[in-house]
Length: 132
Ligand code: FES
Image 1: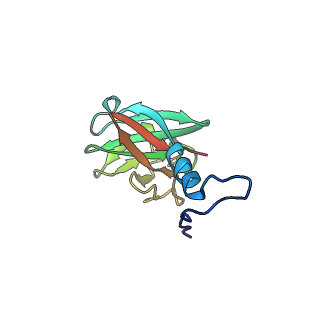
Image 2 (image 1 turned 60 degrees about the vertical axis):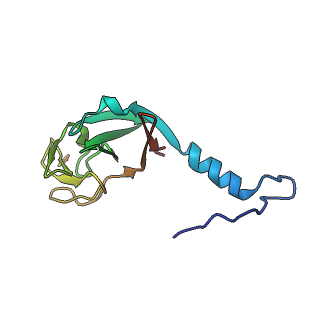
Image 3 (image 1 turned 90 degrees about the horizontal axis):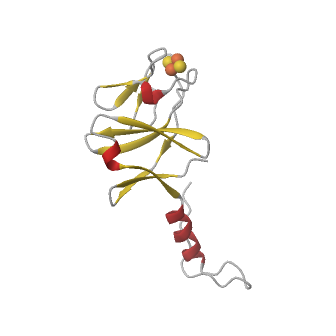
């Protein structure tokens, strides 16, 4: 479901801040800086933790992707997995594969996707949508 932000409407009589501004502020503050782009060379990965959630960052040919560092089969650490076929990570425990770009589970014994987080690179720093 998609909710378009209302334009130039007010949240209440007491609060005259336009809802559009609230939406924009929330969008911008929804990201947290987690690493420097230079920390992750092409083909590399890095573990970060935000709000007690482990997030695996991957650099696929210069594009940074962020997925939860939890294999949905049995909690394996995906950041320690092997990158195969250019865009998949193979869990180091039992070999399930996930699409790093979408989080989709691609092979047995995992069936459920892992979470993904939007990524922005700003001035050489990696920001991700705040995991909750
Ligand atoms: S924990 Fe990842 S395949 Fe089993």
